[in-house]
Image (cartoon, rainbow, N blue to C red; front, top):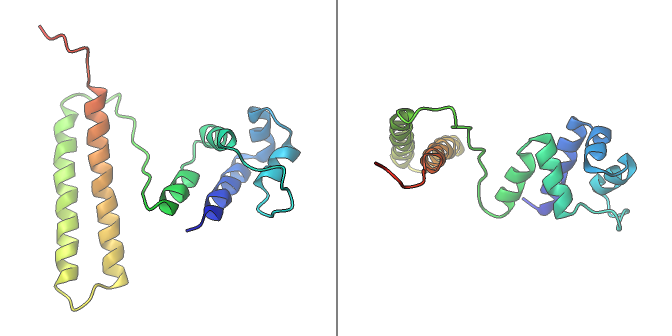
Length: 154
């Protein structure tokens, strides 16, 4: 994946949201934003800045540009769910989910390794299960961090 994909995602999300509406929220003219979102090099003085990137993802509430950037850098991006309304007892369910998802990864990996070579379908299943496992771990992490108090327990 190239950095161009990040710009493509920003352009797609902006157009889907509405460039005119987004430009107004960003405090710029629609023409300027259209120029910044132009993937051609003909608009050398109108380029997306980091501030623009942050505003676009903040206003559109879409993770596509983050996913493209993460992939480009060899990582992954996963939106964490809002856990603020969950009870502390729900933490046990999350811990169990982490172990279940890990088991799913191990099952798919074992099945793939039992064959002479790993197929694209097997690799895709392992990838999907691994990402679900990572998501469960990140969910657990977010929940525990959300439980942090002032440290004064009676």
